[in-house]
Length: 503
Ligand code: AMP
Ligand code: MG
Image (cartoon, rainbow, N blue to C red; front, side, top):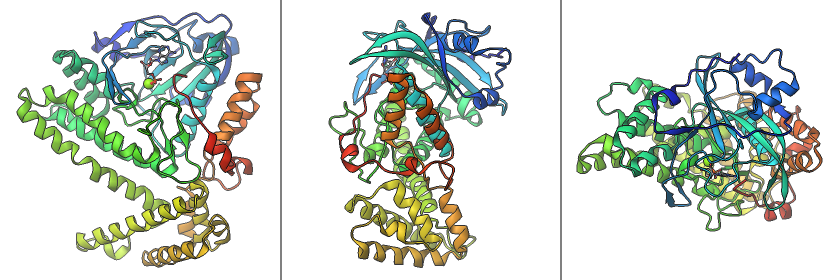
């Protein structure tokens, strides 16, 4: 029924514990992404809803699944834990999808494991449906992400601040390799297993590096580039991950673990929603620096592979790490240029001096930064501002103007933007369409997410969840989703909004 090929379990003994999911007393299917199941090549035909619930809760794993709890370590809020691991997750195994890509299937919330420490190994309906909503939103926004395949209510209560209905999520990922996977073996000075893990990561994510004389250094570079692009994309849609611990940073460059995440409303880089992030370590504007910090932890873990002589390994790793800020800036500029609807002018491409291109890049960077400064100064909704800027490109300035208390400040900026835009010679309609294709109308607004999850968790009413999910799947359409999904919360609601970890 499902053609598993479990390379992680086969090739990396010592990096996991074989383990079985807990039995769920009364499973009930809450969500199944049928299109994703088809993309994965899963044959679910002939399974009725009850059988699907048994399957995706872990009561009836298919032949070939080989559930394991993966070992990993991690820096959490800056402090190192040498033994985290899957405390409430299990990898079923891997499948090759229809496009030929290897994907992990894994449970979250499937019960205690040897890595559970004090935790109950369980998850609640609300947070698992949140994984569906945010993951699908990110996917529709074109941002690399793990995705939810299914959510099944277990029929069992879980104890948090209150008693909540329990659930199990089935998650799909390019892999579950994280920075913390490498820290686990590095902390134990188990260089043999560390090397096997790195070779495995290369085979899975950077096969072109196989046999490269400096492949571990190049692995670090490849991960840094993926993370630079990923975080630039987060910043482009106002996404705050909320818990960028090293165990939540993937080697694949996919976003993982939608716990205390949230989207910005009014633009402010200092925005923090997570109740446990008291010092703002994972504030919106800190995310690029934290990615760099996390990559430095990956570099430290890889040092013994880069060169047996630390004095030789360190400067090589440092040289790669030092490329991160420029890689991030370049990725961020590409994102912001697209949001601004600016193409590089035709006379700057081709064989014209690189110096001219650099001047244009610097000017475009300033233009973007000045727009963001305006949004911040006037507390303008980030998503609406960009979407309405696309309307300005189409000749309609009123919606954008209505967001700004200080009109002249905006007009000054608009004049500069229009002058720059004219230089690339793009027709207005084409520019407006290009801008609408990257500046979403619909994002997962925090108040809508909370309302949908509350209805599902408290009242068993999935209708708001379904409606929101449908809206999130068409973020760039002007009319696919009802207006409520494109409307910010009242500022006082957002000011009080808090997200919770340990979900
Ligand atoms: P997270 O913050 O969700 O990325 O999880 C960090 C670590 O805590 C991982 O090792 C998880 O497996 C573990 N963990 C989180 N919640 C639970 C839970 N309810 N029971 C057991 N372990 C958990
Ligand atoms: Mg995690």
